[in-house]
Image 1: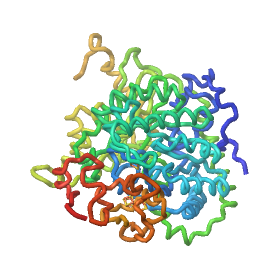
Image 2: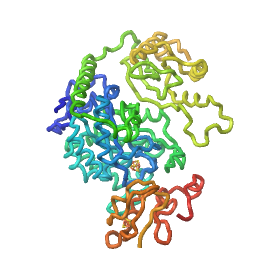
Image 3: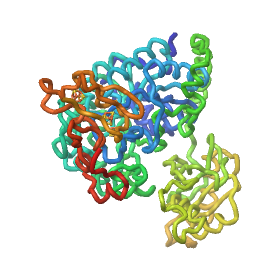
Image 4: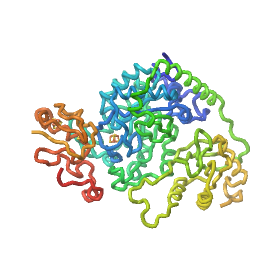
Length: 497
Length: 92
Ligand code: SF4
Ligand code: SF4
Ligand code: SF4
């Protein structure tokens, strides 16, 4: 059965690119700069398209445990942190188990369109397990898109194999293009039957990554580049990385923050390498953005995540539960097609009407960042229950999504918890710190205490737009602020501090 | 002549795929080397392959119990820090 719109068949004219006039500047979505044939491939991909990730789901299967390099932000007890959060362990599956699981999930969650192999190690360091999984899947579930992520070391060697299996999305984690920077990130690699340390190893890894990137794009296979932002190590350098990978044809660059908790036992965690602040991350994403799409909604899913980005229904699909499920995939495919068609129709309709420029905002008003405790596109969460805040920027041009920032719901620290004179509400202080740079926080409800603290921090709490669509609510509040004149340059306004 | 895997092993499979003699197998609580099959890679490679790819210090020892990858040799984490985090052992 053919699903025309979400088919993963690569278009034949790989280099026919160029920016079509309809694709430039007018569409609201961050993918609008892409050539049409690439946009068509990614616009329904939950990990790549900001709009699609609300409607389509992805899943990963953990079939690839081995790895051939060491990253300083990784502890190999856990999943590969190039694609998932460090410190989580996925249920390792054989290719046969993985197929069973994918079919069960796809039948149960028709929105599931993308299957990825991302770990727990490096998929291409486990070629037999990885490609066996892809091969069986293309046969049994041709309506599922396939994607794979890699550290790049073995990539050139497997590009042909990747092309054969019709895997049209590859993610390469590229943290540097300079071996001296690389030596601070990668202590060693395993190459040609030897362990190679330091600059020499990093140099080989970088060459392989770049070569693999070029080979993939020249075959018309989409490449996303992930980078981990490591303050003081590669922060400035990533701007150059972004330019180079863009020039070589990567369609998306995703800069993720380093996660370096001492309790994860990683080199950076133990050596107390600082993590980037949300502001540092955003500044870098802005600097790299230029005319290349930056991915701002990545939530660093775990390698066996199931469901919509940001949710994980993995617990419903453990191997013991799947073993007793009875899946009729032929029937499921019919149902899946109906669901996909209706979602795509909805997305098309949304794309069709370009949002009009908002009215009534004085020219020259400065943009404002707002944090939203949102769910399913609505201002729906209680301030204290929000696991993350969605950061939006409102300006005279309209509202755009910037990023999401995670909050801490519970203590994750080793012994920093309950120690010394830390008050119980220090968690609240930390969460308020996460909102740095925002002037308003929108939520469905908010308690008295956080209200006061937020105001003291210069962030206006707002609970008046509960259950309203996020973008409308943000614009309404922006207009209210604009009406006070506070957004104009201080010379000709009242300037409220 | 054979190498051995210790309790430090995290069961990551990396060594299994590179052993020229198929000497390594999954077991609980950690992977093991079949000492009838292991040749320490003599004749196949200049260095034992399992020890060349293993990411975990102290996970592989020789017949004398010496670590092929002693503490700090792979990560570069100083010994004091390893001790502080309980990641240091004198012997397997
Ligand atoms: S590539 Fe992934 S699994 Fe391998 S060391 Fe890096 S983060 Fe860990
Ligand atoms: S030393 Fe060589 S032969 Fe022995 S287990 Fe390791 S890889 Fe296999
Ligand atoms: S490579 Fe090392 S940690 Fe991984 S399974 Fe082999 S001995 Fe264990």
